[in-house]
Length: 282
Image (cartoon, rainbow, N blue to C red; front, side, top):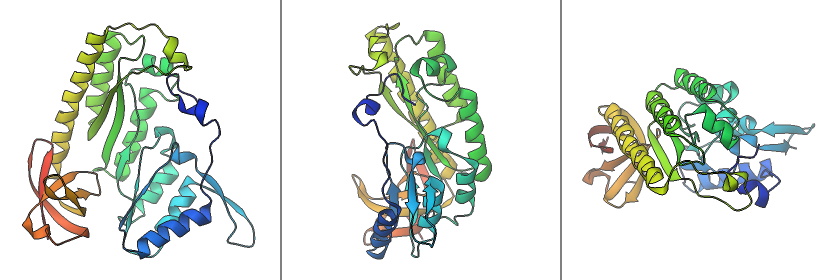
């Protein structure tokens, strides 16, 4: 599965997985040392596959099996996923999320790139808008308030004005929590680098600007929905003082009561100004 615009498969042609014992040992060590939020990262997390040699018979462990083993580790911590492909968001994984008792953060960054089926085909992505929508609906049945973020590309070669408008409508209808917007940048050696461009640079910049306007609108909605809700935040030092990151990946500004606090704490979201929320630690 190689996207038409991506250079990664040519520079890293083989996928490798961290040995299971190493992954469990590292997370266990971090938790023992007081870390309370573990973020799993990888080029294609959902394709994790390793061997479990802990029993009398060796077993193959996929990503869901890895998550089950991580969540079973003792300690007060939670696990968050970095970028994750929609085709790897299986019902098995959603069942793990539902039974995790808060240790599996209900926030997902699921790259979409475009909400136009025609553009997705040109990109050689491996899903349709309808498939993406159905998997998001399955996620929300399990976790209605899940944070849902995505990547959105402006100006992919050949994208027409109609396809762009259709993409924007799809994104707003799915009601994402936030967008990561970027313009197409050709990478030498990829098929897309040779595709003819249908839109000029000014047009591409205008499309990206509209996507970013939608991002602010969606993030503001996301913050507004959380007002009055009790959330578990990981306390951090931010640019505006003490901040917290909720399990749903909403960043909140904290008051003076959080000055000497750290780690996971319960807080209540009290207000928001646009996409920025404020919360008080309980």
